Image (cartoon, rainbow, N blue to C red):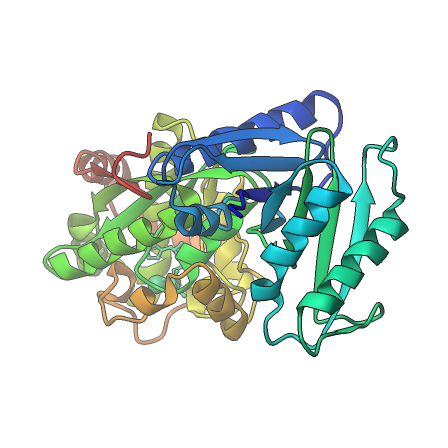
Length: 397
Ligand code: ATP
Ligand code: MG
């Protein structure tokens, strides 16, 4: 018997009210369609809090599509299911054929019958009992455990078909990409900023990135590493325009004119102001950084208060309350960790002060900054901006 499989993507319903719900659903469907384009011809549509991803021919790469669906923000659960006709004969026959390989090696299971079509002749508990019987007959050694089963088999009788699936994997969660607007991520080559970008993308922000280099103090390879990171982030963020600005001259000017313990803070003022300008040009309504409270001298409360005060747009720091090991867990989840730990130099580590100010006052920083021709340096640095686009795959539009 040839069994037809579909991928079912479930999304949360909590925030789904009125028109919001439709926008949310269509954003998800759109993103899945874009992602599906490299895996074959699929029909993708939503019904009753589920998005159906149906292969249209035998050339479809179901495994690839399934993995792609797990990376789409806004989807809380993903599973593959066998399609049945809406009658018990078909459901029973397909359960017998489809489930043994899925349940192989498992010790306990339960069946959850669900019917949204109340005219279906069997009730949900009756469906569960029937299919439970089929499994006990066809899978050797497996037992029922309704309290704490190793696998839950779900039989759902819906509008047009019934679906059988074993288990469900978590999706990427969050809200659909782009549903919350656009933000500019300050992207370094470290562990924290790629995570910060992914966490905000998870809440629906489309991510644009800005990287500061300081050639020749930072190398071409350091920049390439950042580009690789942006590319890796695209697994979840789909598309990222990466802007690069050179801070070389600014850093030399700071080194030659300012008091050493303020070097990093003054540099960060420039970074924030350049980022704000870039954000406005590219229609981003917030900045995102990977700062974590107290992690380094420039991330004390007083230091963050200073860098925060020089821009006039929200600055999101999703890692602010996280320990390094928690950030690392996220970095592994988003698959950026292995790249982040490659050795590199960052502009922040060029000319680092021996005793950076940890309790800076805004006036002191501004007084140091006044020793430089701020506007001219801003103009000159901004003019060095170059842009590259990274995509989850080449044909992603
Ligand atoms: P990360 O691991 O993200 O590099 P970090 O712990 O090294 O962070 P800092 O170097 O103090 O911390 O940087 C704090 C934040 O400033 C980074 O998370 C990032 O958002 C931004 N940042 C630092 N260096 C750069 C850079 N070269 N280009 C763009 N943004 C940067
Ligand atoms: Mg860093």
